[in-house]
Length: 125
Image (cartoon, helix red, strand yellow):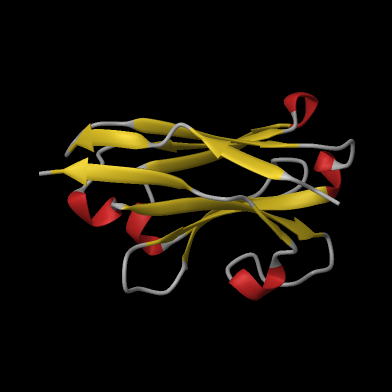
């Protein structure tokens, strides 16, 4: 069983930055690829970014390329999402998720086995 806990959300003005963290319990963190998703009110959960188990490969949604950076520290069982140049449209609950190394898509919510409880990000205009 993997438990994921997100932190780092909050209220920020447009153009500002936030860094989200997601820490995993257990000793198998490096056995999972990790992803970040977000869900705004009334909308479906959508892919934001993902990273391979080693950190050597990263994947991004079109809307955040160049603004968001995903990284991980396997020694600390933590994955990060650095978000710069934030826009009001980025307002959502952000979730981290863990995916088994089974070759499934990094972009689909259905590929992920474990989810955190989410952290709210609010960007004011």
